[in-house]
Length: 370
Ligand code: SF4
Ligand code: SF4
Image (cartoon, rainbow, N blue to C red; front, side):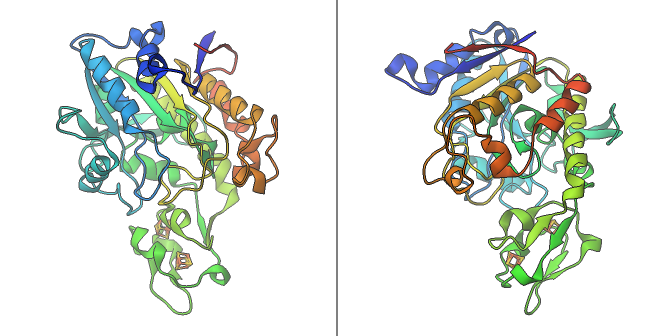
């Protein structure tokens, strides 16, 4: 049975700073055994889009990088790029955004700041997968070639998964561009011209030209749309939506991609979910609303399903933040399912599928205040 550790967010002194808490994580046996002298260690983050302001503080990653390097390992900080033309689209954009967000490549990370699928997002290969949806998926070579991996996820609500966490970061964040397109292939966006005021915001995010200028609305060509969701994430008027029939297929595809990732890592993985600044938008939105729950600290486990299930339970069991979307959706009180109300998605269905696929289990020992 896996253990899930809950490190609370409050601090009463220097010994409880975020840096001390990160160091404390390295004393956990499940994480300590991944930090091997002279061996590579990938720190898989989820870099945010420019404009999203509640992202994982770089000091968290910096601390983990420095501590693991001091222990003799060879850490590298990595992520994958986006499918849509935002601030993480090309290799150049991704590095530039990482620097602007505070990941100082040269001094802090010894230039060990790299895309999992290389500068083109396409360095990697196809791995066959079990399951009823994908048949296999393309994984970024950095992640499959590195020894062990620590998956560091900033938790938010998610319009397709209910919440982001370890399984999402594994199942989407470790793929090449082709792998992401494969996972997205079950999705379809729908354009509602009655909501479109022709503002043009979505045009710059569209990588295929499926959106073009028009009057009184932009013009949308589904034939050349690759379902990257850039228009959905950026439209201020909700004129672009995701057709609901593809969502269960997407969830199972993400689970299968996560299984493919764990099956093909050279080493082992450990998962750290940050439940701070939990916003209704994911980090790949170009904006963010205020968080809807208070700072709930850090959850850590070697089981991605257990840590995500614990994340879901903890977010629902506590109070919501007054004035946030939790109040708007009537889920301010303890025990009210904030994830389901805010995202419109019940994560239990894909969590059950993840258990069926042996990615992990909800059946875990929960250790709080560690
Ligand atoms: S961002 Fe939305 S409202 Fe603006 S042009 Fe695109 S679809 Fe229309
Ligand atoms: S129209 Fe299609 S390709 Fe263009 S941004 Fe939207 S989802 Fe992506």
